[in-house]
Figure (cartoon, helix red, strand yellow):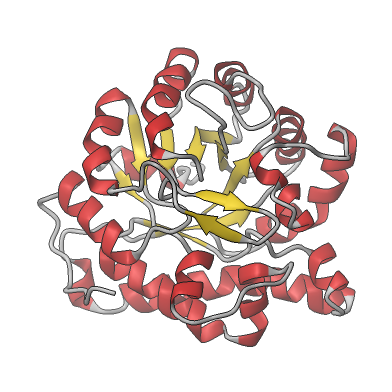
Length: 324
């Protein structure tokens, strides 16, 4: 009998899965300078213990699934930074190994199992725009077509699929062409599944202007896609986006918005927005309209995830977490 897909299996036991929060932005808040094209991926080589500590903090906060630091970790990106082909591939793998090791260390402590299922690890597959480091993950203005995007993603996707991650997370996808390229590649990788989440420009469209209902319906037809949704999008848009996805797909809906601030690609800084996020206050509405997998993206922190779990899964017994 085939092994059940882990995300689907977890959703059969609990109504809502709690994701982690921001990785790179929280590493910056903890004093790391990520002002280069590799962003958080640079710390995979230079400060892996910082990444491991943050993964562990999110697990202590109540995350049922943590996402690896491979969002901006690509062979091409590491090669551009001066690594050999072999070392670049090793760094991509290591980003997932750090998350798996943190999960295993957390789960080895008996008290951490109270009221919990064994947490999952999702290997992040960031968009082509993350490699470009020009903010195009928020507008989808690419210089590649679907074939070119498939060529870009192929090697990294194969590396990540060969790790011990429980599933993949194709995230912050701004472009319908990129979503199609990723689905095509996934169809050629046996026994690997993903969630597909889009960056969105408003309450109905992904960042390149495609209606989310149209592309969600398309990618949900793939047996490799086990959840569809929204991430790194202003929280004020999320409820209407969930409703649009729900109309066209029976897959679980995943949402993990940013804090409501705006990313400035030129200065590589987040600018204050009109609606800064109190994650837990929005969460009940998102679940009510159809979300099953909920967390935070840029500028959210372990304390936000702790409050989120307390709001959505109040019966869980969690270890204490110091506020940051």
